[in-house]
Image 1 (cartoon, rainbow, N blue to C red):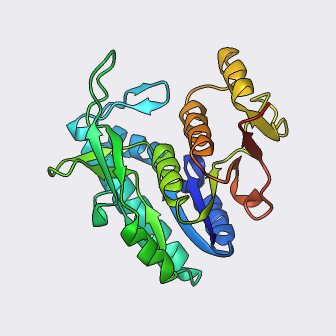
Image 2: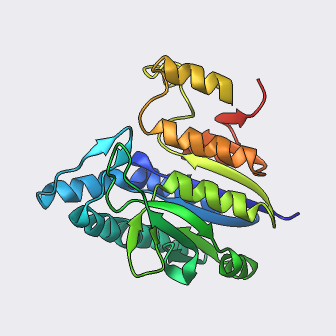
Image 3: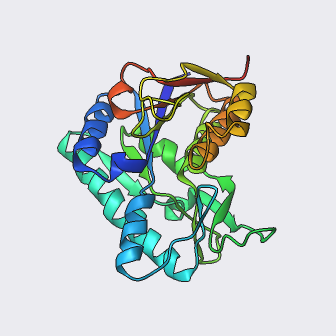
Amino acid sequence: MERLTIVKVGGKVVEEKESLDQLLNHFSQIRGKRILVHGGGRLATSLAEKLGIETLMVEGRRITDEATLEVVTMVYAGLVNKSIIAGLQARGCNSVGLTGADLNVIRAVKRPVKTIDYGYVGDIMGVNTSELRLLLNEEVVPVMAPITHDGKGQLLNTNADTIAADLAIELSNYYTVNLFYCFEKKGVLLNPKDEDSVISELSLDRFKELQTEGIISEGMIPKLDNGFSAMRNGVNQVLITNPNLISMARGTRLSLKD
């Protein structure tokens, strides 16, 4: 099958012009079909603060009330998405910005309240790849913002790592999919204070051990949970890396075997 590379980018990479430029330089040079999925949580937090809206996080996941939903929609689907599109077009990479509501690509349901009420956070119910594949066949690069919809007119804030994983899983029925989670670090670090302590290969069991020890925590947990889910469901390769290492495919490679 033809290769498809899905790159999810977040953290400081999308917030700082220099690091975003590096990412777009490397991404635009990837051969074959590509999809870029982005976050932008810290920019949303910054704008919320300026607007006097409190940001609440639980284990790396944002609580999304009505006011926060408006902010994240503006930041994710507006400022961040269109800045990335403009950067890719400047590099000769024809692209289109989408949310899950556009072309009905990703439908979600408001997360049910259990121990925590996450507000307008969406859990993905279905991924429709037919229009994405048409775009890919026309050499257009879809750039996905982490906003979905419920099919009844309600937008929902949805974790970008999950969107990337679910897209990778569904599209693995049609392509050999490599999924790269790209952020400011070189990979998953054994020692958070040592930038070079990259774990080159991480098994599921080792991940659970490091999570219990507190070495892997906060936002890295949903990233790895989604990465391992993708591996279990047909995705060819999952790599945690940074912009400068994309082309060399270096970083932390996930493995289902010890």
